[in-house]
Length: 378
Image (cartoon, rainbow, N blue to C red; front, side, top):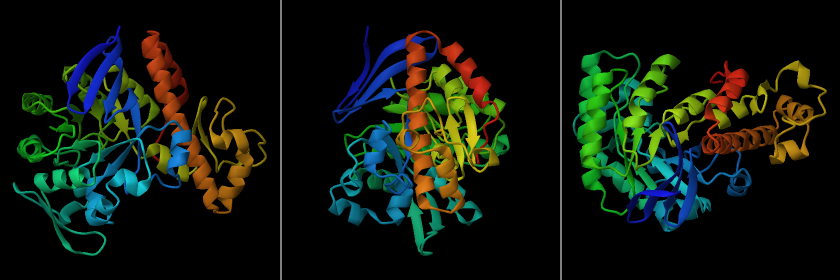
């Protein structure tokens, strides 16, 4: 039986199946529905590298992640507004979630000046002085007409001592409150739990954000260099304690096993560059594990990347042909490998949903463990 858990303005989150902490649900925004657990393909600048929107649809992608920080700097919101928003600019009719830019500010390093007002830095594109505040971030996301907005937060490096982490977490909470007050639209806005690897700080952040009543909740500050067991501990301790009736999102993790473990912990949404970036580096995800196309064994292999895959690349080309293209630095190789990996990840999420529905999630995870124990971020 379907349980309608959360309804507000233009968003509905409905849970259909629950298996321990894991759950399947539908998320509907502006009459567009996705099934969760869901993986958001990265389209930072309003494009998934090497793919167009037709490719994405054929790979069963229904939501992408773009970045408000980068789009603000290039091409700028004025141009995007001339098209009526990011959907029309890139000709995408699926959902778009925009990251606010907190992680991107962090990635600029020591040249960023952070204070209570916001983050001040030089544009990496032209050197102009830029100020990003919670209010500016929300305004940018609103003006480019995204579907789901994220609060502006601070992300810090791993490891950081507890005093530094606490100050950063408290700053992120102040920015979260300002982000919510700045949301002059009806667009869903997600809060981001911070607190590093310290359970007591994560608890404080989590509870404060719940009290602010956001439309969904993310776990941020992960996949920044911490050991996998530490990351799993943070997810296992926090995910199921986020509101049951709202979407739960872990930001930036993308190894198949990491996703599966997080789904088991109760997470609904994911994003990562691994499928697309690793494809361009020749690392292919298959039903039997990882294949590295630059290995000599594929030079004369007349079969597809994966015999069990129905993607465009596997249905039309041999792995030896794609290897040949890669060796010749042909752009088509990157496109075909990206199509394959993106399709694989959407199929992975479908298999996880099916496993929850059939109460066989542990068995499916055991299968993934046999195939993907040693996946690296190429």
